[in-house]
Image (cartoon, one colour):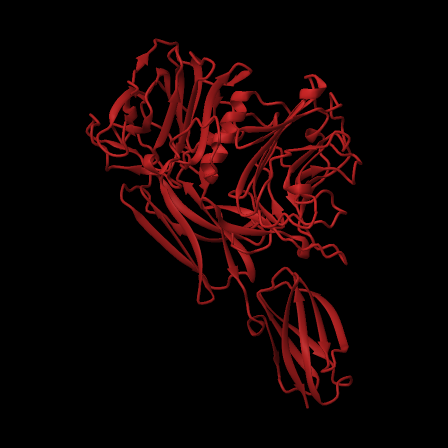
Length: 627
């Protein structure tokens, strides 16, 4: 059994560097050049809806998109351990191409490198048909401007190309099956001897080491592709992609192990070796969210991770991180706030703590591991705030999921919205969070409990709750058609200052047709503001809710009423019973309810006709009778 030890060091206060912002705290935008994950950055979060954009989370804005509706993959909820994925269909129709894929233009950050590290999380629906089912590639055609390609292929092996197809290799004899989540990594190091330059890992098990001629992958003028070998190839992917990470460096062994522990915990995919984190186990509470870590192996270390990748807590190593040492941390709470319960063991009089708790799994082979620890209010989910006195804040620990807390340390410094605990050595696995002895003056201001928008009876009901408020002036509800360009919808006055839970609600009586997005802006009395998460609502209007005709029956002079299509370009057609088009026009709709006059009195004989309105790829129909 481990015995925990706490050591304080007398230090000159400084601002520690918690710089690693890549997955699990490995890498920065300079090295982690591309990162997509289905729980962030998708153009929709509604199950079964098409995805036209999947935004890069690395900070480099290499966003992949698809403008052709029939080739857009779809968002899927609860695919792996409750987390979503993007599903690419198995449709390979070629007239025109129908396979799903996403793509981004050529970006020089993606090649001209002597090192690559790829991490992928996939779940295949099919592996049959002899198709090259590509997770990610950068090429314009077969062996043309090809920087890399990672794909399932012949005999259900996983295959890899680096700098063209000349040294293609696979996981042979290790095969893959459908309906199973896979973590597959490819690591390329051009500085090694040819025979050892490329390795393929599955769940931290080395499956293949093979030769690669190139010592450098030069600049390739080719797009980045997700779900296809290249844009002109119609072969489908036929499965789920949950996460893809690309580094243009060869990560060291410790960094690879940390990233794989993050992915394994998040998606509940077992590692067959190098499992350094047990906080994701049910017996320990399933602390499998935003796992990040520090660690060292003989090939190098990962000495720090930022609070931005772990939900609000960061660690920076000072000393004692030896080969084989690790500290990995993850939490179990999708929301965070200041709470005044479950605070037994605290010694103050106005006690409170964060709801969010981190499980720390510490592997220490010899020397005590000395660290700086920070808690970042904005990364933990809070808005702009002026923090109180550092000595009011305490680092809390307990060995089990319930029971009294032990105060391990008082705050060393407050810098902006960060609370620092400097020079601390921890050796015991368990549960850690931050508390305050004075929640009135030294608050932990996580205010927003939830924000939701739900379609009910053709209206969007918008609700949110705060746990507490401090100098809160008002809220602004904003809405968007594309989750990028938001507009003002309405303001709601705030409670101002309160330590009680406050509930709010409002209604959008005229929501957009189709998928729309809502977010909440909270503004303080000093003008500072912050945003909530973005939520999506799908309003699938029926034909008669979008268009209707009056008078009807008519002599041919009709008025077409179009609802809910503001700022859209629409096409209007009139067809007869045989399907022949007798009238067509195009119109830009400028109002939420617009009337368009159509005079067909001299061109239509008595009978029944269909008026067809096409708006943004959706078709609406209604009948008109000519007498």
